[in-house]
Image 1 (cartoon, one colour):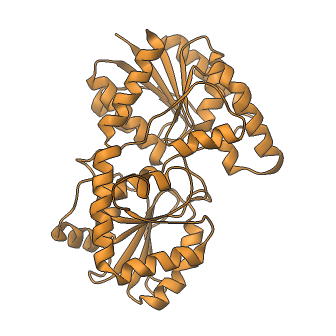
Image 2 (tube, one colour; image 1 turned 90 degrees about the horizontal axis):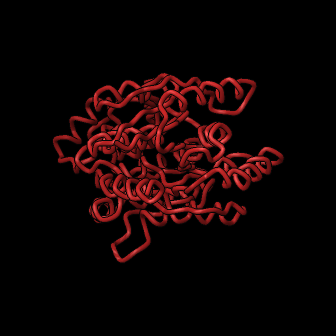
Image 3 (tube, one colour; image 1 turned 60 degrees about the vertical axis):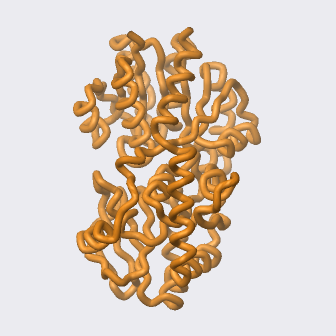
Length: 365
């Protein structure tokens, strides 16, 4: 039996949901799977599918505790003795490759490059590290072609493969009118509101501040407009005057997509936003920024477009795109149908997990 150790610092959000999906599929396929991560929602999900959790205390950013994190992860590797280690996101990629140094087959998945989040000396140090660490990486998995291109543009070479992020199409199914009404009632939203939603942790990366900057213009043009912000870092609150509803992180984020007319993804950087794909699977028109994965998901290819892409930081462009959709229900419906078709064609979770399994077989045979 092939044994796999997944390592991740985030236990919430898109990275954690991607890890959970892989673990569930790999256990179903007969692999022996363990996950090293801090405590949080992700470990709580593992027991339901038979995954083994290895407690690994780790902070999001490198700091004084780095050596302790390395020591603990080294002990976990020695205990589990995995055939392959799959490192998710930048912090696990840093600690894991320093610990393993090529002694076991190692897969690294950035889930968005760390150097895109930094500036100055920190940015240059992150780029130098990623260039250096490829010597201890058997293969890098990219969530989108643009993510791979971003790495290459910064001199990060090595063996790589694009494995598009995927979503559970059964979980994120197309809602009917009754479901939408129920979701709006549960969130305390007016049934006749024009609703846009952003699902993601409150952070500079996710660009909620850009949407908030755009929202007065949207409200002026469409007085019934409401912006829903759901994710880690928020508390439940409704500012009716501003038309902004904030919701704490929930296990079932589908409610936000179901209640919305339009999904927003105003990120400053990404690999390929999982919340963008979840909204698409729920058949929602989407307005995103031109970061890794957005154009591939929403615009490219022979299928009709599923929304619009604007420049990062462009609050005016974001507002204009949202206003156009709120004022044109037929456009939202067409883009929603195209979004679901694109999700079914390219972003089914089963396709993603199958591609990852192929990479494992490639490294272990």
